[in-house]
Image (cartoon, rainbow, N blue to C red; front, side, top):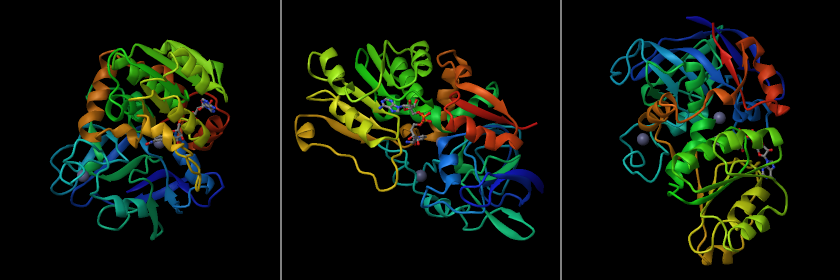
Length: 368
Ligand SMILES: NC(=O)c1ccc[n+]([C@@H]2O[C@H](COP(=O)([O-])OP(=O)(O)OC[C@H]3O[C@@H](n4cnc5c(N)ncnc54)[C@H](O)[C@@H]3O)[C@@H](O)[C@H]2O)c1
Ligand SMILES: [Zn+2]
Ligand SMILES: [Zn+2]
């Protein structure tokens, strides 16, 4: 079939919205009609050329929500008409990692996905016979996509997809960091560094876990105001004195749980140093620049602090994204407030500009 999609032709250039071809789903694959898609930093990062593993031409986009149009042979977990959220982090339910509750890093299709192909090593995207690669296994800056069944979370038919799509990346990453990676305990003191989509998600996750105190630190007053709306009990402007201030406010010990959602290695260090002596856990969700390293004095660890990394919030996508969407439907998560701009696919580059200017939390592309 022919469809419109935003193609990354050349790094550092705007995406080009054009007509491309999409082949039928093969065995184990699903054709999804996209209804909405959030614009995330990772799309902009790859488009800029800063990501050393990036490739072109490719159709970007990974925060998709859509409706199943057709399924390939052997697909049993979704059927035509089902509402789905796309998963750049799949869940095959069969590999050694999927069988273990300690991680969500499914091993089933990693290699081909990283190269831009579907699991059989070929793309479904093309233009005049020339192959175009898939991005993050999702390629949701497009009217349709073909994805493996194991990379689709079937969500409630009641969920509005323009909001549910945020659970495909940033929101679930923040929520999950608190709920599944750190497993924040009731009454705990938490510090969240960063109040973008990921940090605000972490604030909500801490609240849902029953944290006693949630300190959110950011540079933007507007974002700190949002953090308060979502459950932060204290909001501070960030800076070099953040660690000292956390220590002062916690009897000199530090916080039970800290979260880093900025992508800045200096802030990751602050998250480690403001975690509590004895049992404090620093969860790192931000993606640092290539080659950057995190500086940690070993004594901070000997004295009982721990560091955890969190990809997609530790969320096992097919099982847990539907549960998180249900909590949104139950009124536990105010998703609407995260959507700052609604745009069309043709405006996708404007979505990047808005993100660059830190104008709002999320722009969502709506497909007609
Ligand atoms: N682990 C994952 O699976 C995953 C998924 C999505 C995004 N990410 C990463 O998470 C990070 C956050 O993403 P986002 O969309 O929320 O980004 P964002 O840029 O919208 O938010 C980052 C926030 O950090 C704040 N900040 C800057 N300096 C600070 C400081 N010194 N102290 C406190 N706050 C400071 C900024 O004001 C900004 O609001 C990025 O690095 C992104 O790449 C990771
Ligand atoms: Zn993302
Ligand atoms: Zn797996």
